[in-house]
Amino acid sequence: GISRRLMQAALDHAAECNGQWAVLQVYARNEVARRLYDSLGFELVGGMTDLRAARTPRIGQVGSLPPLVKFSAGNWQPLYELVNHQLGGQMQWWRALRREEFQPSLDQQATEWFHRVLGQEQILRRAVQVSPRFEAAVVVNARRWVGEHTVQLWARPEHYGNYDLALIRWALGALQDFPAWPVNISLSTDHSSAQELLQSYGFRTQRTLLTMRKRIGGE
Image (tube, rainbow, N blue to C red; front, side, top):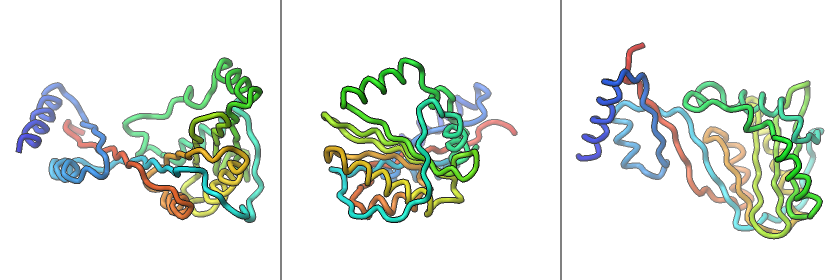
């Protein structure tokens, strides 16, 4: 059809310009487009799934937790290393992590302090730190006035189903002290243990964005 011809024309043009790879993103629910890309030789690189709870889930006992370490915005290096390890080279193939995404500026740290003093927003950070490195970590942006809560979660893949679940329970437990606004979290598509636990608490998948690639140049 037209879509296939347009895609093939784009790939041919990229090859003529000495391009090495073609990269695209597609929503998982767009099955028609995914079948087209599969037939053209694109392979899956990875993806991210957005989940949302319409209001903060009410949970009972958090249960036993591993020792958690509170860390500040300035202690960004072990978090940066953790995320690099979790995502790995395959997930970062098309867009590498940038240090500045984890290293807050003085203005950003001042803004965080100001919002906390006003009672508008509080950022909660906890990590499982068995050695000098982080094994798993969570950052909770908890709002008091208006808005939505945001949870960011990372864990080394070898700890999926263990530390990640403990940090989710801690994060949801911490949010019990805040208004029951909606809660949003994004997870790697391979992080199924965390997705299953969140779904048991009433989170629903909003969208899954997949990244695909195809080699069009020589080795």
